[in-house]
Length: 93
Image (cartoon, rainbow, N blue to C red):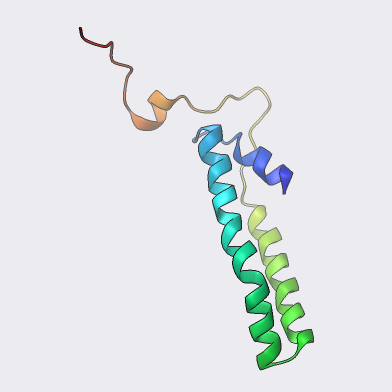
């Protein structure tokens, strides 16, 4: 997981904070729901089926992780002005 957070913080179209917070926010549903879902599936079927479902979801996550873009070491994240289309305006007095 640390590698995914590192890559999320180095995406070219988002700031490091946005990338890391998006990945961290995406972890919470799995953290909170995984145990109850495994328990419900095990109760409805059996433990082997529930744990097989866990393995299938893990393989699916690994396949989706291939979609993460890697940034070359010399490439910096996109500046805020380019992402939002806004220019820094001098403060008026």
